[in-house]
Length: 150
Image 1: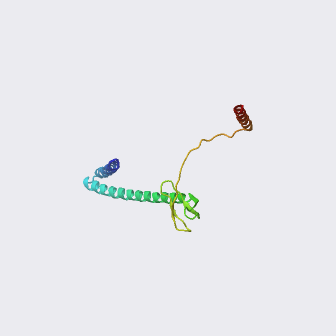
Image 2: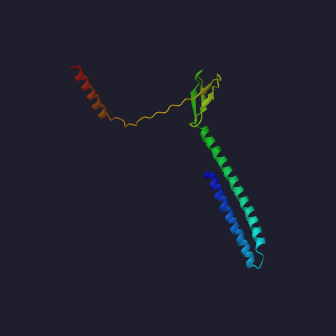
Image 3: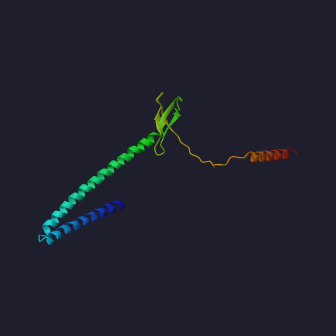
């Protein structure tokens, strides 16, 4: 519904601009001691044709740009490949891995259809332990262990 309203709004504004330009042509004709309606209608038709041609050109360019972006995305996607073993014969296959699709591949050796299962988990990053901290931890563990033996 919002898209339809946006299209109607843009069309209405376009026609309003076209009408204003046609009126300016008609008024300029009156200033030159000429008729009003003929030049106004001719101006409206002329500006309508020019506007349609311009909109068609910009729409065509936008479509070309979208195709170029799509091709560039496919090139980027093609570089996201991994080497993975076949579940049936353990032969290594190189296949593309994408997060937004099912990642299936056919083994080049045995022809089995494989599905890549991905499992994500998180880990907390820690800072490395210094030698002083390591010796303190070992001493503490040793003290605790010796205390439990008594």
